[in-house]
Length: 356
Ligand SMILES: *Cc1c(COP(=O)(O)O)cnc(C)c1O
Image 1: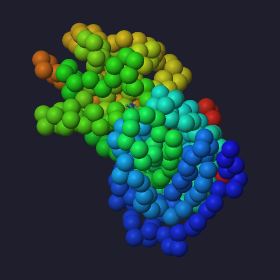
Image 2 (image 1 turned 90 degrees about the horizontal axis):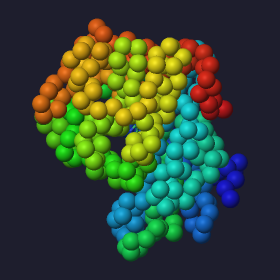
Image 3 (image 1 turned 180 degrees about the vertical axis):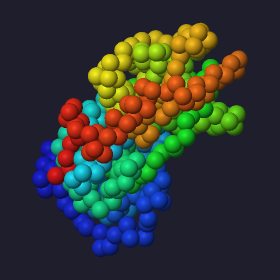
């Protein structure tokens, strides 16, 4: 097994940070000076290294490219406004989800010390890249893919696990216009909707591009059987607020990604005195309660955007507008989450894991 105490570290000879200023930190554009890389060979994780950020070489027959054994996670690290210390938001929950994805895709699990300790050491080494400013953070992208150079359809015998880091600023901060998708589907029961595997995102690109052509930012996925029940929104879980009750789809169907931000938002809302219901929610119910004036706000939750409000929800028949003057719960959840993550509120839930 991997002993992470002796990760081999090769340091970059210079930093690229000096050529970049913070206002260029748009999501996913720049990567830090180092990356973590490990290989799965003969049933064990080996060659665990932290080294300068660089291209990797793979076979043209690499089975991840042909058949899609490829999974990832998205996590954020923050520099405390008060102490300047760096902490990671709930990485253990992402670690557990990563191995849930791995099992569904018939890939090996990654040990906790490789995932968590490796991440901590990598972030500590590139700590100068963790921004201090409000709404800025270090996005952490662990991922694993099959590396066998063999084009038969079977699980690969070898894999690579990597972690790369990208400093990031506000994702997109304007409220979203959402199109209710009633033709394409993201996930079906028995499928892979609960896993963060690469194929789910490739399959979503065409429907999302179609919605963008119509002037929307994202699609709201509906269930595959009837296109009747709400699922999630782009790479965000979704909440609809009716007065003092927030409703979000439940997880039983296995078609929804169990977001760490989703579970954090549920905890915070309950503690703020907002009722939370995890259950089926139909488009009909949303429309009916909108007409009655009961629907006051809707928002998406995810690591990249935290909480993103929805200003318009449209399908082929109707367009619902959700005016900003009624928004209360979503902004309160965002403010509280940001305060915990940026260190200006006490971390009463023990969500922040210090890097060192
Ligand atoms: C990553 C993701 C989410 C949000 O999960 P978080 O853990 O909150 O970042 C929601 N839906 C999909 C499809 C996702 O890929």
